[in-house]
Image (cartoon, rainbow, N blue to C red; front, side, top):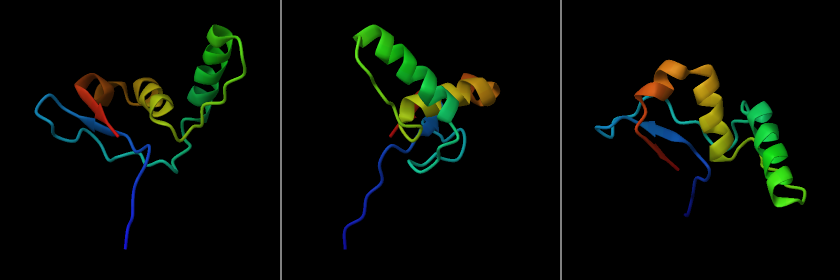
Length: 79
């Protein structure tokens, strides 16, 4: 069989070690951050944009806001 994973966020240290558990595509905890990205994208691009909470950028912003100490240890973000 075939399987896959999309839009998961893996935070890695400079030594490529995981900083925290991965946030998977189905994790929508970053809903407020997704709305923030969507609003900014709409203003910049002058057309409506809806960035889902499951995408990686909102998750990175969520981590910066909610887990700052872990965010500060992160050197790389992988999908």
